[in-house]
Image (cartoon, rainbow, N blue to C red):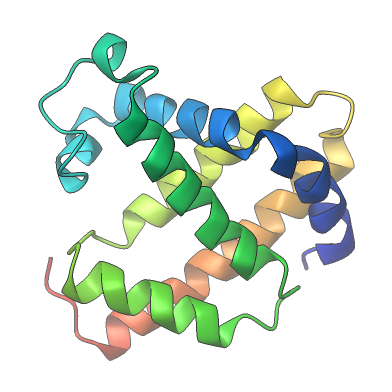
Length: 149
């Protein structure tokens, strides 16, 4: 079970720095899963060094983290934003659902590195539980849509 209050407490502390956090998450995703970069048209075919401080990665970082933040702030009552997110990722972006698990796992690690005092063991467990819930609900949407990607 996710401790949504703990997750939102840390999220609030991080929000002022959302672009940098998002950049670090995306760069780590691309480093660990290079094939994932192909799902971001403005970011593909560029080296990590080239991407590091571009306007494109900053814009994508904002988009990704703000969408995730909108879901996190629902404290588990997130069916509407999850449906909307899944719909665009199924029909427009065609991103396989396992990438949500990958990026949220990376997010826990990046947040732990960037906010070590806030991301203690309890917070890491809370985020892992929250992200597991979110990813599970996203996967249900993919299954309902019979995603073949």
